[in-house]
Length: 113
Image (cartoon, rainbow, N blue to C red; front, top):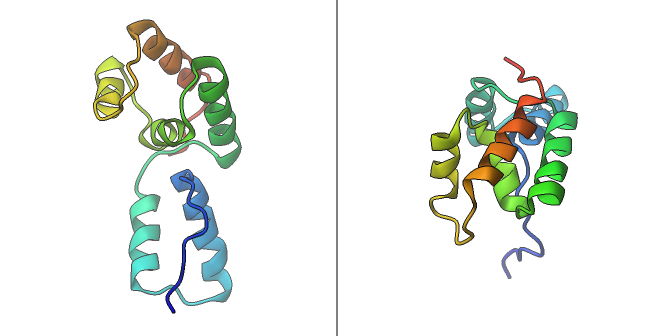
């Protein structure tokens, strides 16, 4: 009998990076884990605390789904064209004013290099 997925929820890449770093302190990372950690180390990101606050604000103030809010936190869009790309495959239509509000929320937080 195979494994069964009980629940699936997207999480921020910064949490994945943190989990892999903690795991690697006591265990040897396999190839996929090593590649993932190296990949995640190359990009700018928000802190775990800030990313959680941003996701909460995006869900509460803008009304975004959790999955979309996580994607926005991970990709850190810089302008409206970046946001349009994120929403291009979403079934939900979002107004320009809402996108500007999203960018204003993101601007309130510091990006870690």
